[in-house]
Picture 1 (cartoon, rainbow, N blue to C red):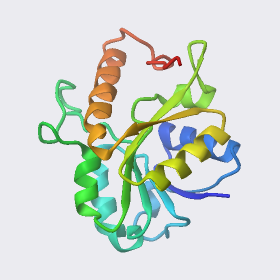
Picture 2 (cartoon, rainbow, N blue to C red; picture 1 turned 60 degrees about the horizontal axis):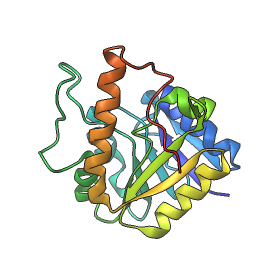
Picture 3 (spheres, rainbow, N blue to C red; picture 1 turned 90 degrees about the vertical axis):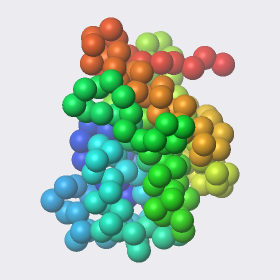
Length: 192
C-alpha cells in the first residue's frame, strides 16, 4: 500500500485523494490550518494547492520533503488576468520546484484534469487520464500504479521538461472553462 500526504483539502485534493483511496492507497491530508504543524506521512507528497501557496509549503517542509516524491499539480497562471503563466518562458512550476528541492523527485501530474473528471473518473464517455512528467522512472511508475488502481488511466508523458507543455495544456483548459467554452465537468480526453 502506498502512503500519500496531500497538501490541500479543496476540490482537487479531495478528488485526487478519492482516486488514490479507491485504489487501496493510504491518504493523509494537510489543510491550511495545519500547515507547519502536521507531519508528512509516506513517501509521496501531492501539492494540491494554488501555485502561490507552494513557496510557503516548501519553506516550512523542505527538510521533510528530502528523499520524497513531490507531485506538483499546479497551473501557474496569472489569476488576476487569466491571460498568462507566471513562470519564466520555457520553464515550468514543476522545474522550479525541483530546483528548490534537489533531494526530492518532483513529478508533474493532475494539472490537465478537473476535479469533477477525477471524481467521476470520466471525461465524456472516456476514462479520465492523468499525464505524468518527471525524471524518476520509479517514482512515475509508483504514482501511475496508484492512479490506475483507483480506476483512472495514467500515461508517462516523459521527462520533467515536459511539464512546460502540460502546464500550457492546463492553462488552455482552464481559460476555456473560465470563459464557459467548456464545462468544469469536461476537458481533454485521450483515446488510444
